[in-house]
Figure 1 (tube, rainbow, N blue to C red):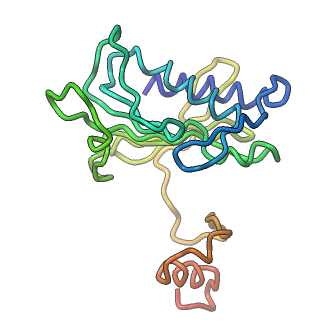
Figure 2 (cartoon, rainbow, N blue to C red):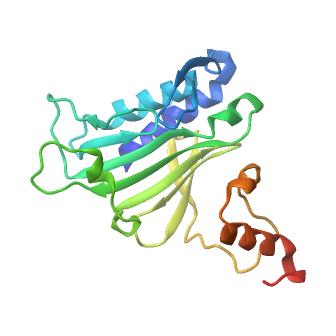
Length: 207
């Protein structure tokens, strides 16, 4: 987790530099989702991989920016965990200076297996050892769970460390806001569409 946090700090630094460092260009290639990659996608992916491959904690990695599983180089020790990540989610927001972030999931690797495959990553969500995301906005915030609640940490740039600022985060019973990609409304299954429509209706609706 310390190495993940270090990667997020480095990515946050590159995001903040933006156009000043020439990081906003499109490079023309596509990732496994068919999305056109931006220079910052590739930079963030390299940062995440190079921050974690040597640590001895991981047996393999999976990234949205790579077609295949990322194996740990032979010169580094292998560990008992797997990590799946999107190094820079929402990169389409970069050009308009909106919030983007990193998403990650830590799983246990199969015991005694040397050659990890993509199937080894296909585990239930309840099997996760830890999971979280880092938001690069007005402040850089790391949201993390290790199975005992959810906590938020804000990056203090004066000391270069994440500080616990949002302990025991809970979704409130009532709220005036929600966030969902409404541009995909037409593709949703009917139960999903109905649920969101009822939420939007507020106290006048079925919920």
